[in-house]
Image (cartoon, rainbow, N blue to C red; front, top):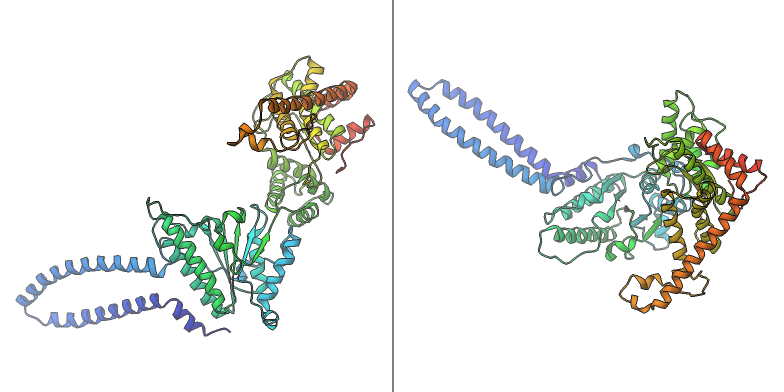
Length: 557
C-alpha cells in the first residue's frame, strides 16, 4: 500500500533535513546578532569601539578555526551517513520507468528467457494471484550469460512493463578497501528502494556485474581491510535480501553476471534468495534474423538485403555484436557517400567485426600469387569435403596479423562434433600445404598456423575422444598434465602419437589427391582471387557452379 510521500521522504532524508534546518537556524541567529550588534556598536564611545575591534579580531580567528572544524565534521557525516557510506553515492540518479522505457517487444533474441521473465512481470503487476494459493513473490532473479546478450536490457523491460521505479547499480560500486564502506552502500541502496516502494507501490533493484563483490567469502590474511570489507559487504547483502521476505513491500532484486554461478558465494545463490535463475545465451538462427530486421528497421537500408544470409553469417554473434555490425555498416555507407545501407556495406562491417580492419601490409606480386594459391586450397577442400561448414568469403587482403583468409562456418550452431567433422577440419587446414606443394613444389612459413590447428584437432581426436586407429579409448589428456601422468606408459604415449601422425598423413594424402585431380579448379580459383582480391559467397558459388561441383555441406546458406 502506498504511503504519504512527505512522510517517506522525511524518513529517508531526515539527516539532511536536520542539518539544513540547523544551518538555517544558525544563519538566522547570526543575521539577528549582526543587526542588533551594529546598532549597539554605533552608539558606543570611541575608546570602547577600539577596544571592541581588538577583541573581535581575536574572536574572528577563533571563529574561522571553528568553522573549518565544523566543515570537516559536516563532510564526514555527509559522507558516511547521508551519501551512502563513502566515496561514491549509490543510486544518486533514480532511473524511473519513464527514463527506462524499454518496451517488451523490443527485447529480441531471447524468446525462451522472455517467457520466464514475463511470469515475474505478471506477479509484480498482480500479487493477488500468488497470494490466493499462499505463495510468496520471487524476491531475487539472477541473469547469467555472456556479455552483450541483453541482460540489462531485459531488466529494464521488466521494470517498464511492471511500471515500477528502477534503481540501478554496478557491483564494483560496492567494492572498497576500508572496512564498512561496501556494507554501508548496500544499506543505502536498499533504504532508497524501500522508500520508493512505499511511495510507488514497488521497486526493482538492478545490480549489474554482481560478481564484482559476490565472489565467495575468504579468510582474512591480515593484509588490510579489503578482505574484511568484502566479507562484510556480502553479509550485509544477504541480510538485506532476507529482510525483503520479512515484509511484503514488492521489492525485487535482479542481478546480472557474466561468470558461472558456481563462482559466486553459495549463500547468495541458495534457494530463498535468488530463487529464479535465467540463462541469457547468444541468439539462435531465427533470433539473429529477427535482430537484423529490428536494427535494420532503424536505419535507411536497401530492401534487397537478405537477413537470412546475414543471420547465417553472424553465427555466435550476440545482440550487441549484431547492433554493432549494423551501426558499422551505416558508417561504411556514409563514408562512401550513399544514403542507404547495402548488403556490401554489411559484408564489409562483418569483416571489421570478425577480422578487424585491413592492415597496412603491402604484398608483392609474388606474395599475392603465393597467398592466392594458399587460400584457394583452403576454400576448395572446405567446399568439397566439410560436412557442416559453408565457405562464405575468401580474400588475399591482409587483416589483423593475417595475409589472407578463408571464412567458413556452419549456418547454425553445432553442439556435438563427429569424427567426420574433425577429419574435415584437419583436411581444410592441410589444404594450404598441399596447394603450395602442387603449385610451387615447396611450401612457405604461412602453413605454421594451419599445422598447429590440424595437430590440435588430431591430438584431441586420439588423446581425448577415442578416435585413433589403434582403438585406444579414454581421455588420456587428463592424465598427461596432472600429477598422475606416470599412469601413462611410454609405450602408450608412443602409440597415441603414432595415431596422431597417421590421421595427419592420411588426411594430407586425400587432400593432395583431390587438389591434383581438380588442378584446373585450383588455378581458376587462385587467379580469380589475384584479380579481385576478395570473393564473396555468391562469387564463390558461381565458381564451383562453373565446374559443376556441389558442396558437401548440409548447412548450405
